[in-house]
Structures are given as C-alpha cells and as structure tokens.
Image: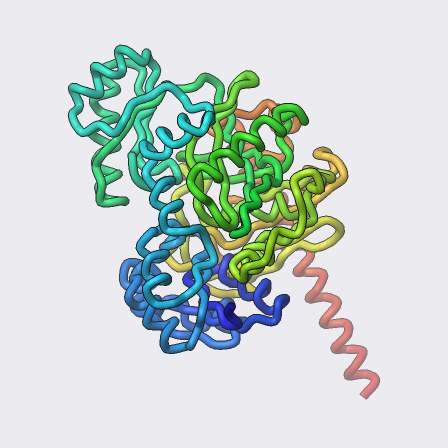
Length: 482
C-alpha cells in the first residue's frame, strides 16, 4: 500500500500523473531539474524536490538522485511516466531494494522486453508472429551473409533500446555496410550497446500497437489498437484509435497475440505491444514496458482512465473489467504539438513561448506542460502538448482536429501546428491510406503548411486588433461613466 507517489518525470506526463493521483486521494511529489524550476508540474504537485542540473543525465536519468528524492519526500511509490528511466530494469531493482512500489512492470519483464533480440525469441516461443530476421550481430561480415539468406531490402536495428533510434534501411550490400556502421554508432551512443540485428523490410508497413493491461492476480486484457504510422525519422507525430486497417476480426487476433506476449514475460501494469502490419498480416515489433505518449486516444474510445488503472493495479487491485466487457466507441486522434520546424526536417526549436492559447469546445482535450507563456527547454524532448480530439466518426474527429488546430496559438517559437493542419486535410490521410513513409512521400504538405500558417497568423492578428479596439471602447465608456 502507498499514499504518496513520486513522479520521476517532467512535462505533460508528470502533470497527467499528478492529476490522476489527486483523483484517487494520493499525494504527489514532483522532481525537477534547474531548467524546470517553476514548471507547471512542480506547481501542481503536493510537494517538489530539486534533483540536479539541467542535463537529463545529471537529473532525470540519475537513479541515485531519484531514489534520494523519494527518501527525502517520504514517497512510497514511483511512477516513471515515459522516457527517461521508465523502461530501466535498474529502476525496478532499486525500488525493490528500497522497499518502494514501482508503478510499472516487474524487473524481469522489463529486461525480457528491453532487448529486442531476446524479445523476438520469447515471442516466437509464445506463438506471436515475428518478421524474419537474425539474432544480435556484431560482425558486419556475418550480417552481410545473413542478409543474403533473408533477402533484401533489410532493416538494421539496435538490439537495445527502442523508439526507432539508430534504425536504418538497406537495399543492397553497399547500403547495408553503411547502415550497420551507422546503427552501431547510434546504438552505442544512446544505449551503451553496439549490438544490432537484421529484419526483412516489410513493404508498405503500418505501425499499429495494442494497449494491454495486466494485474497481479493473473488477469490480462487488451484495449484495442492505435494507428501510429504518421512518423518523421521513425518518431510518431500523429496517432489515432481505432485504425482504418484493422477489422474487428483482426483486432481480436492482434489483441490475443498481444495478451500472449504480455503473459509470456509475466507482465503486470500497463504496456504496449507494437506490430508492423502489411496487407492484412502483422508481425511483432517490440513491447514498450511503460505508458505510451499516445495513451489518451485509447482512453477516449474505451472510456477508461489508464493512469488511474496503473495506480490501482500497483495498489494490488484487480482489473475492474474482463476482456468481453471492453467496449470501443467513436474515434480519437492525437496531434503531438512540438517545438520543431517542419520546413527544416522537423529540427527542434526550443525557446521562450511569448503567448499561448489552447483550443476548446466539444470533443477537445489538451494535455500540456504549459499553462501560458513559458520556456521550451533545449535539454529535453521538444513536445509542448498533446491535442486529442474525439468524434463519433473518423470524419468528425478529423474535422474537430482541424478546427482545434486553427484555435491553437503558440507565439514566440516555430511549431508543427501548421503541418498537422494540412496533414488532416490530405486526401490520402482522409481516405486512410497510411504507411510509415507517409510524410516523406507527401512533400507537398510543406508548402501547404506555409500557406495555412500565413492564414492563421492573419486571423490571429485581426482578432488581436479587434480585441484591442474593444478594450479601448470599454475604457472610454468607463471613463465617461466615471
């Protein structure tokens, strides 16, 4: 049992967990680096503890500082959010050694799914379909020989870590040599592990994931799929639930495979099994042993609060529903609002936000790390907020998203809001013709985003001018009345 939770994270996910704790009557402890002094999550938590300098390696990734903050605050549980230490078996082990509850899976499940090669083997044993590929490889010549057997095109992936970091495609031996070297370098920098493995490149792939939940009483269920194919540099930009590619019959098959995957490693709490889908077939990609950025779209179509359920599972409760009781209604779309420049290959654009206005209205939810003007730090991920919309149909959800993006204003820095707006108008997107190569194969969206941005800026300028006129008239009337 616990009644005080330390959130080992920052930004919108820290805010999200703090709110869920308050709903359950649990006290919350925020941690923050020097760069995050005064950040929204530190103001909303019941108490907060500074954990070090701005670089994540000296604060949010420093396990000793996190554990010291838990001890100092008297927290009995830790919620790691996503990113940072959320998939670290070291954190799970440290919580166990310090008598703390980790609001996440057991150390053994994290370790089993943290290494993709090990995970592939476990999935094959559990009867979960996987893409043809290899074990972990360090020798490039061995990789070249394996590629000849698998057949080109080939994907080179880092054995450790996730999020598509280091992943490279190769269509012949020359490209493969470069891809192996580049992937090994990236993997070593990001994960301290240079091992890679090969997989056959699936044609016209869609990235579809299944949300799973498991309690400590042996119950495991899935909450359906999320479509995550809209990506830049293998990083998700827009997600939706359900997917236009998934029928009710496929949802059942994918869901059953995801449940088998979770049960194969003794999984407990919330997790996500990611699949590659192509022409009706699907293959295991990896399992994220944590809450996902895109969890709100699942919440909206199922009516379930995933963070609330995470906390309840960690408190020892059984899941409140069985698989046959899960219902899906309507359609949800999430746009990741990032401080980044779409016209410069989505390079991050941190800086000071001088004005900030969130959209509202029917079917609109914004999970944000800002409550007004503030700073997007160069030390961390450039995501400012997640704008999530819900509609009875995909068409209604897309229309509400377009309307909401026009109302969304972030002044002082460049964001990807204009890109989202024109993406949601694209005929291929509206028809559900999606692959993970959607963005690079639709270069025309960049010019359209420029035009949309100019229109929004003009409308906002006119609105501001009208507001100033009204303020002047009100002031004059007040003075006359006085």
